[in-house]
Length: 191
Ligand SMILES: [Ca+2]
Ligand SMILES: [Ca+2]
Image 1: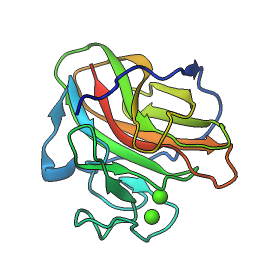
Image 2: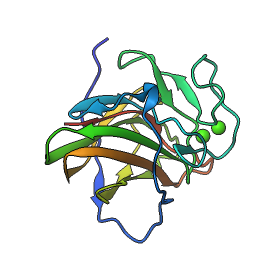
Image 3: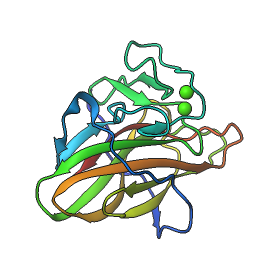
């Protein structure tokens, strides 16, 4: 199935004083393998290390009906487009995920998220990111994509990363719909 990859309309703000949980981070990537940028990174392949280290989920229950990472609180859902696999769903404000990888050479990298967001109230959400080592951070305003199964790419910013290991933290900051449902997170890329 060919996927509509048009970019979401977003606004990228200068990061303000919003606090993202800090950590002296020592977790490992899934399977112990550091992907090397540039790459495509499925959202469900967040780091190992568990609640409070590799992720924070608002409850320990796993909504996943599949068989992957079922002992963890992150809520996974089938991803019927974009090559299959799983997305992170049931996201709530305050939840976050971390992804460790390798930067082979220092240069500017485009950070791109793939998200879907269905909001009959036509509201919006804010997703923030932070690179734990370099400190680069930003926030994006996300508008509805037309459905939970209609993901779109969203350019979140350009960051200059230096050679070595780095960790990206993705933070679901806020949403304005009454149910508190943040966007589904499918994947990200560093290009
Ligand atoms: Ca959960
Ligand atoms: Ca959740």
